[in-house]
Every structure is written in C-alpha cells, then in structure tokens.
Amino acid sequence: MHAMDELAAQTDSYFLKTKAIVGHFGDRSAAYAVFMRRPVICAPRFAIEFLEKTAARRGQKFDIELSHPEGTWVGAGDPILHVGGSLHALVDLETVLLQKLGPACVAAYNAYAMCADLPKVAFMAMDARHCAGAEMAAMMAYAAAVGSAVAQREAGAVGFVGCAADATARSQLAMTAYVLWKTSRRRPTVIS
Image 1: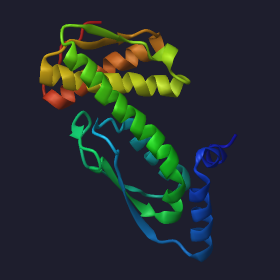
Image 2: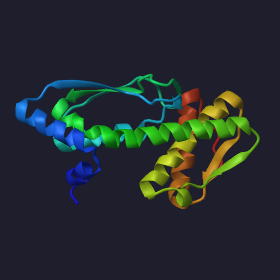
Image 3: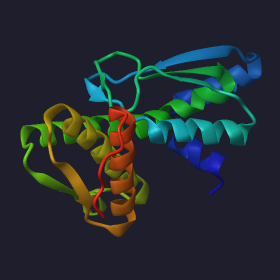
C-alpha cells in the first residue's frame, strides 16, 4: 500500500471529507495547538518525525513549534506543540499525529511514576511482548527512556536500564543517555 493510501486508511473519515471540501472550495492557512487531556511528560519525537516526513513527501513546509522540551511536564490541556501550514496538507494528519504523540507522552508519564515510586528498582522494559508491532515497541522504549530520565533527574531513581529485545534495547539505552544529557546538560555515565 502506498504511504498516502495507508495514511488515508488510518485517518478519521471526517478529516478526509474536510480535506475534500477544502480542496474543492480553496485552501487556507491553519494553526493547530496539539494537547493531551491529562497530565503527561513530553515525548514528541515520533510525532515530529511523522510531521517532517509527511511535509517532505507532500512538498510542504509545516511550522512546528515545540511548546515543551522533551522530558518536561505538560499539564492537561496545555499545548505540547503548535503546527501551522496549509489546511489541505494538515487536516488529514490529526488522527495519526495523535497516535504518535499521545501513547508516547502517557507512557513516559507512567514510566516516570513507576521509577519515582520505586527509586531503588532497576526496571527492564518488556515492550517487545506487550506491543502491537515494531513501531509501537520502539515508541514505548523511547517513552520509557524519557520517563526514566525525568525520574533519575528528579527522584534519583535507577529507572529503566534496558529492554527485553535487542531491537529496542540498543535504542532505549542510547535514548536514555541522550535524554539524560539533554535534560541535565551534563554527559551521563552509560555502562554497556
């Protein structure tokens, strides 16, 4: 299936109808404020990559402004990011965009809570057996790294130390090191 056909198959039908109407009557600039309805920890990597890749495929330029840095707290209803551009080019992206942002942010929040509540426990992410496919496993490993880094920074927690599967273990450890470095502005010690 072509990437655009696959996107349409995963998009809420009213967004596809809106895209057709906008295509018929004329395009306008649009600005989206993307938020979660509950408190989360910002874990936007998959969502931003999706927007950037889709913009490139469509020959568009989206203005993407991250309101909260990765690994920071975001209150319920507070925009995580703002996206601007052509309504025709953006309207059919909302469903998949939220699929790439919401689960990662909620999982990062949950990973933080686990690590902060049990700060002396070293956690192993078991994403490979509890996820619906490789993309979700990678997203959950990323979220565990983000939430774990916040718990390490704020609660002195041991946090997540690895993953059960090689495919996500390498990326999770690398992401943990990167998030720790980015949020603490010092280079962490990583034991491999």
